[in-house]
Structure formats: C-alpha cells, structure tokens
Image: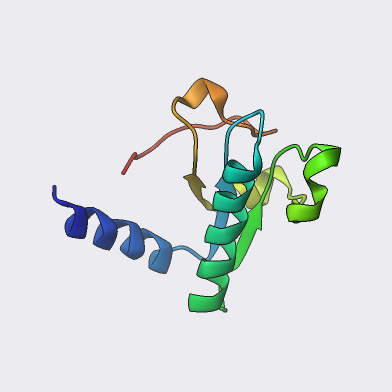
Length: 104
C-alpha cells in the first residue's frame, strides 16, 4: 500500500466514525501532545459533526498546550481510536482496555 492509499484508508475510517478518540504515549512531551491535540482540531474543523476526544494523563508543566477530555467506557468502546506518536502498543496512555480490531 502506498502513501496515498494509506491516507485514503485513514480518511475513510474517520468519515465512517461518529466518535473518535485520539491517544498518545504514556510520558507525553510537547510533540506528543501537539500531535494529539492538533489532529483533534484538524478533524473537528473538517468534520464538525463528529465527536472528537483527546484522552490521557496531562503533566502539570504541559497544561498550557491544551486540555484532555474525560470520557466513559461506553464512549471509548463505540469510537474509532487513533494513536499518535507511540512506537508500541504497551506504551499507549489509556485508562481503558484497548482491543485492537484493525491496524492501519
């Protein structure tokens, strides 16, 4: 799969979802938080009808970057989950159990 096909597949998944949760790694730095919050804002601007959430721990010294959302297990279970800036699943910062159905 080339880059354009991969991007189209991601866009298709976003378009199919009503609710989207964006995660990142456990020990966030400005890059991880910027990726997470920036993608959230991009999706909200492009698809204003979608519910988009960013969740995870927020260090006190980085709160100036933005706020994290609080969601329920039900919202999480019924959302498309996107992970940014994370090299392996065991480093994902998420209060819920993550069951991977499909990886793009």
